[in-house]
Amino acid sequence: MNFKEHLLGYPILDVVAKSAAELGVEAYVIGGFVRDLILKRNSKDIDIVSIGSGIELAELVASQLGPDVFVSIFKTFGTAQIRQGDLEIEFVGARKESYRTDSRKPAVEDGTLSDDQNRRDFTINAMGISLDRNTFGDLVDPFDGMRDLRKKILRTPLEPEITFSDDPLRMMRAIRFASQLNFDIEPDTFDAIIKMKDRISIVSMERISDELNKIILSPIPSYGFKLLFHAGLLAIIFPEMIELQGVENIEGKGHKDNFYHTLQVLDNVSQNTDDLWLRWAAILHDIAKPATKKFDKRIGWSFHNHEEVGARMVPVIFKRMKLPQNEKMRFVKKLVRLHLRPIVLSKEQITDSAMRRLLVEAGEDIEALMKLCRADITSKNPEKVKRYLHNFDLVEQKLKDLEERDKLRNFQPVITGEIIMETFGLKPTREVGIIKEMVREAILEGTIPNEYEPALAYMVEEGEKMGLTAH
Image 1 (cartoon, one colour):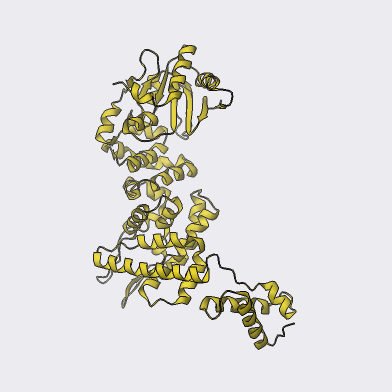
Image 2: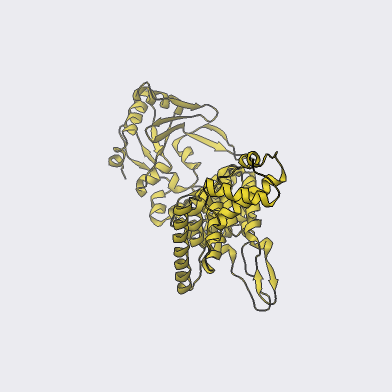
């Protein structure tokens, strides 16, 4: 099978082929680029294997491309990298690897193309295409990766237990590729993941979370999470999520399975956003339900205050999983804390005051919050879903009208502590805080607009009731 016509769309590969010929070495494009070329998926990463020095080949290719092309060399790994436009081309010499049981960092030595293909994670990533002048475009597929692509199967080139023992991160990668490509994991390969799952403990949390984030960003992320769950990996890397699974029954009263509910919310929100952190908010929105679950004979099951407890769990989970501790974490925390508020508003008679408070607390994230809340409707009763969504339409329209009128997003009262101190001749005291809070509440209740003159008059009036005199 020859892919010459497919390669012609990438002029850089012609430069690589000519440079390899000049050096007298064989070169192959290999791995994910070949897989995506066959699947007709866009790929911006090209891996080149040279039967010789990958660094030397990269340097010659860069010199052919012009003086502005820079080569990044990683001598420790024997690799080099070139960027051209939106393409990233990585060069490595063919190698074979051997592993110690306590590390996923291999001992590396020069090898043949066959050695290099043996060390690949899956058959669909072990295919190579020749860049040699006489065989340009020929597919080198020793493990029948083309057959596995057609059958949509993930399988390891060598015995799966060897592949996963050597580099346990490949277990996460198997599930990530299955989730991204909607492939099945071949039964023996999946059994090996179950058997080898504890080996994941030698992998850094940063690498695990990187693969988990790619699963979360896949088209139907619940598929990846179900594979993680059944493989036993989820219990190791994300135990809080496992606790959501299962239904407890007392006196004939049960509650929904919050694990599968969470996966449905994640899939729902993923239909409307590629925002990784909004998808994380979907994953964590009910994370505190196991910790807050209580049974009452009269009302059944409750999860009182799970949104507040869940919000406090977010930074702890993010820290352990080596996820950001910045505004991305605070965004997820905010959405977890507020995720019940629009639902409550949609069930009750909507007051302007409650709407204002939600707008103020959500700020710029109000649209994301509403996407999460819509995704949280997972009833199997279509009429119930339709009714809830209609109520959400009313809430959103009301929020939009209030925002246009009162400009409450990123709300700051026009009366500051400095104005209060100057007006009443005060130093920083408890009274300043009390007056400031009274003005804020009056604005949110709609008693006064968030404008300077009426807010100042209200402040003076309330201050005088407290025995203060305006200067």
